[in-house]
Image (cartoon, rainbow over all chains, first blue to last red; front, side):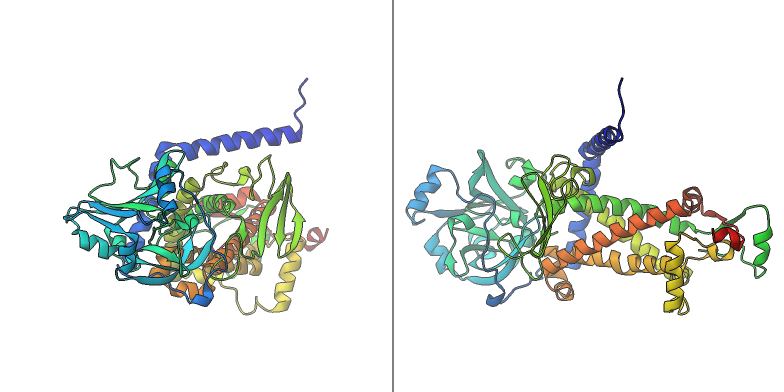
Length: 249
Length: 283
């Protein structure tokens, strides 16, 4: 004889409810409808934002005592290990794709270019925030030096790190690429970037969340479309986990 | 609330044997109520999944693992806890560790049930539109249609003695009957006004404050709430208060007569509870 206890009924009912809810969550139609919210959010934010509206900047006293690292903290490739061993003296940043004059910059060249220093807040998608002072070269300078093609719509950042062999990459559109606070940073709080923070160079795109701030940037590629680049959604997390490409919220 | 059948000869109602049906809830209220209920449930549940990604809250402009949270929901092995300041309270089975999962909020109450920050965010920011757009339309309608007058407590109702009497009536589960049941009672008015004009705007504005894009567009948001991590804390507190309101709201619906209350929120028509003789009330 089966005795249906209240506890069993509750556990069974809970299971059914969860299964039902998860079925709704997993439905491709539901997923497609929900992306409408993401598009509306991006359009609305762009509508109420000045193209060059600056992310808030802070004073030195407002910095986080410890700026924690996240994501990959040590690229696994032997190429990266060799560059790191040479203190990035042999490291070069490639700027190519839809540009008139593909470029290659050493770290010393980037540091001698006009700099921007900004104390900004880094917001992880998980919810935490840290404030730090970044120094680097405005991306706009590099794109102009390379002569960005009028066909270019996005800028893709190819990185030295990977997750289980899948390379990290990110992308922004031209509004964010030419934003005055969008820099390729080589220093945090006055010190050269540590390996954990993305040495020798990382992206700062201050109006978006942490996963857009690509670390270990090796190559900047101008493209007309994100389709055909890795998973086609414009970034490692976008391709593999489903994070929103527009990470303004 | 409308009073289409209102008449000054109120006492007659009490002696009428047939139940008095009144048209109590106008269509815009009913439409907003149900879209809002859906939006709030989806937002609370997906919001709890988002919280699970970093189950700590801070005050100020920044806050991360090595800073000082004022609230942590966590677990030691299979023992769940909530920590407020430096005081820990065991919450195994509810928070921190429940249903065999080491998560701040258990699978039963989150969307999705498993850990999935990307999907939870898609849900949250989709239903945010369903919260904000109908909410603004409702408030605009309430202003134009003078529904706000139904919601606003009168000065008389705000007198401590009046409020105390209403608290006692609620505690004894005595609900208004006859003519008094045509209108919201004072505690009901206060709770609706707090939810509509304080908690929902609070949750929306603190939500926007957490957006790095919105902080660039509207930097005053950060000044209003004292920084992004303060905004995140206030977001959570407002959401918890809304959840508390929903719990009490549902209990009240059940106690006041769920069929009649549901009918009035679905069709608009409400059966006016008859005035009972005072002996019966005092039982």
